Length: 310
Image 1: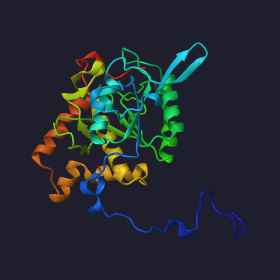
Image 2 (image 1 turned 90 degrees about the horizontal axis):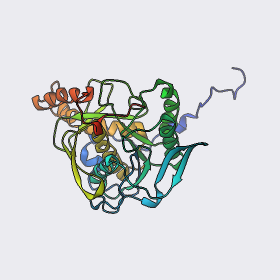
Image 3 (image 1 turned 45 degrees about the vertical axis):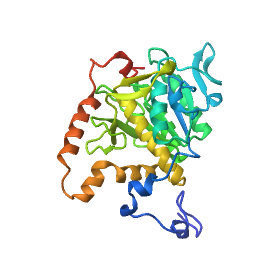
Image 4 (image 1 turned 135 degrees about the horizontal axis):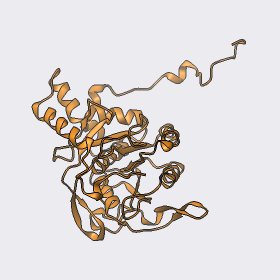
């Protein structure tokens, strides 16, 4: 380049790089991250089968009037505003788990799945595009597409969300196959572990998923005001989404990579490794091994727990 003012794209003055302060890894404790927080001021979108907004377990946390239903008509994909039902119970379950961690967060339903927990890539893509346009703080995606034609469109959308400071949490497929956008670096990917403590989540030392959370035999809210016991990576993801909402309500300025770092630093096995350098506890190691089996999935899973194969 020539000339005194010629700079590479996105070059900045060095003063821009100065920070008033930053937490050290020692500061990144559960107490620092979320103690005393409720999720207040955080907006969470759940792209799923709908949410039963008046379910007693949700305690009015769902903004039913702000809901969106995305579907296909003759002239293309349509986004319709307003309340809608949960046609399965899957979305209500995810909302319940988020609400348990962040009871004051406002949850919005974006319905894309039908009674068979199926949809199309075009509908899912439009729904994600919509929530990005609306500027939600956290988005739970307990669904995905296995069609590689949609890999690049979702990649571009997830990057757009990342740079807009939107935290996308995705569930890995229940069977051992790649789905999109669940394993992109711009999202936070989650699979199950075999533990029962909802607050105990793990950094996964063996990617592609980054985190492991409770997702086996989980008691959740379901449609028609009842509760159900469920298993699947779909239910591990909202544990992390709810915790992220709780952290953001206490530290609203965090970017996605900073928030992911906080989750890494406060995960159970990282905390234990810091307390006992060089080794994990026997309990942690066995939990991670068991969760690998869940992440790989099984064709014997009940149909309602199978991931969508769009």
